[in-house]
Image (cartoon, rainbow, N blue to C red; front, side, top):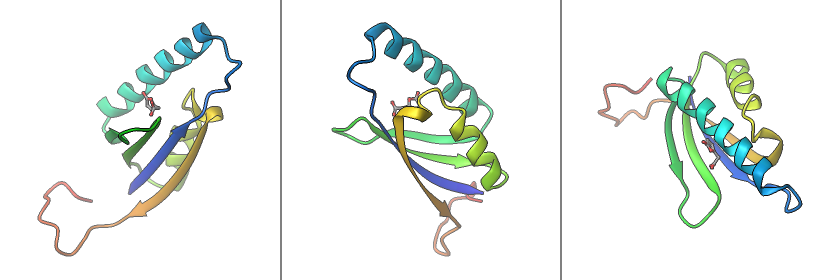
Length: 96
Ligand SMILES: O=C(O)CC1=CCC(=O)O1
């Protein structure tokens, strides 16, 4: 199942810079692991913001919840999720 996930990061201003850098580094490693596993298909920065738009390819809602809630930045993000299905006019071979 494909999901569009939009994440907007809001770190508390009082968080020490070293702690923020540590969380971001852990987030990057986890995100890249999920991309290599084919679970996190696209990761795009929304220009001009501290937000991303991502496409996840997971078994079901429960797997999406597990992957997203394990993100180190999860406590500091507003997240919105939209389920996707194949468009009848799409010619993409790799669409679900
Ligand atoms: O910077 C972001 O948009 C949050 C984020 C998600 C994966 C990652 O490495 O950073």
